[in-house]
Image (cartoon, rainbow, N blue to C red; front, side):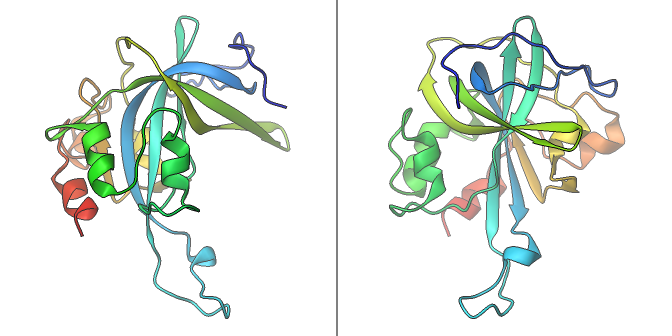
Length: 201
């Protein structure tokens, strides 16, 4: 059951990133730090008869989450850029924004070409498999009046389920902390040309 409090950190810190692993469900203060574009997993790309079909474009939102003075980077499940009654995208944002189409999406999340570091509370749900606990952002629960100084992004933030994202759009104020070779693989901060073209198809 989801708790209605902001949990205290009881987990571990990653040696690679210095970020913590969240191991308790709850509502946390966060900022939108990136949108990651991926292709749907092949095993789910099947038509109604079970035949393979073209993989859909999907988008995962990554959040910089506050846990006291520590930080965790927690993502959503990938979702398609659709806005029907059954779509995940508008439901994910419904307590913060009304999104009926791609134009609403761009208007709410972008300031010109820059992805906004939207300050909000997010509902985090954890799942335990074996000896590991995985956290994901289930939904934005409300907007906050002010944000906080973002923590540095890392190369793991450019991956979805361990695979490199096709494109990563970092919010204003977020940059990669890794070496230049890895940084070149990701567009400059605020570069949303790719996403703008995707949204307007």
